[in-house]
Amino acid sequence: MKKTAVVLLFAFVLILGCGPEQSSAPVTATEKAGSGEAPTAKKVFKIAFSQCNSAEPYRTVQNNIFKQNVKKYEGEIEFAIHDAQQDNARQVSQIENIIQQGVDLLIVAPNEAAPLTPVVKKAHDAGIKVICLERDLVEPVYDQFVGADNVKIGEMAGQFVKEYLESKKVEAPVVVEIKGLLGTKPQEERHDGARKFIDTVPNVKVIEEVGNWLQDEGRKRMETLLQANSKIDVVYAHNDPMAIGAYIAARDAGRDKEMIFVGVDGLGGPDGGIKKVMDGVLACTFIYPPCAAEALDFAVKLLRGEEAPARVILDPTKVAPENAGELYEKATVE
Image (cartoon, rainbow, N blue to C red):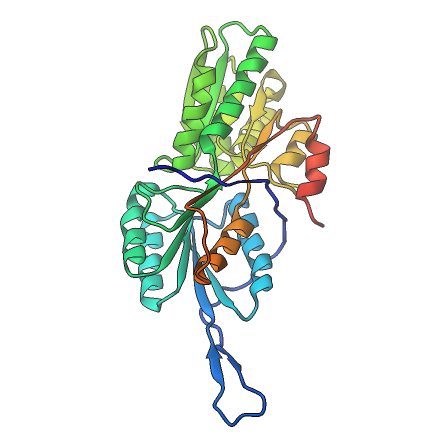
């Protein structure tokens, strides 16, 4: 399928706090001045966001950006977030319920591609407009995809690792790769992209573990690896929380200075990946835009009957010590 790509600069904000889901909203009525006619109902579009796991820091930021941007469309849309808690069955069940509720548009961040594709197709076949958010499905059973290029992010990370090892002239380097949840497109693509470069390093040994996107699991996996391996040169994790978890394990073992840590997400705020680069915890990270503001704007366009591209691909950005301060200011709103 020919892909239409729209490249946008990332723009996101970090809003603290999380409000309750809204399941319904009143229809706005307007009355013609000077006439005896009954008020005419103004259409209020119902949008449901099926979130794969709100517990992840990236997802928390994403949710809050949605909530902030919904204010732009007050009186035009009703917006509700449904948290699947990283459970495929729960997300399928929630989308089944969303279909029954008769929403106008579904935004979905799939927990995993294969288990979610059939139910998203069912929603689309039922006449619900669908936007797939930054985790692609097995087939394009949606009106639009909004995300960044995970293969490119992986390539950028892999190139950074390769150049670091070559610049340090590391002999027989050992790289730990901590993967996200298996079966998700970002995990697969961030792996494939990075290995294009890492595997070309002479005599490199790559040790793979799965951290399921979670900091605590990244820490636990790293604790085991530190006991089994006397030499580790680089830790590349598919997101910042897992990279930070690995760093904590190495720090607690007194070995954090032996290696560098590379992540993905690049969130703003005091606990985000950009600040961790500034603090020397991460050697590098890559901003994966939350995509929420763009997805909501395109959702409203689709509901209004306006044209929207089939694929919207946002640019990733490398965060290193030399530009972290500037990017932190742009990415963080107090």
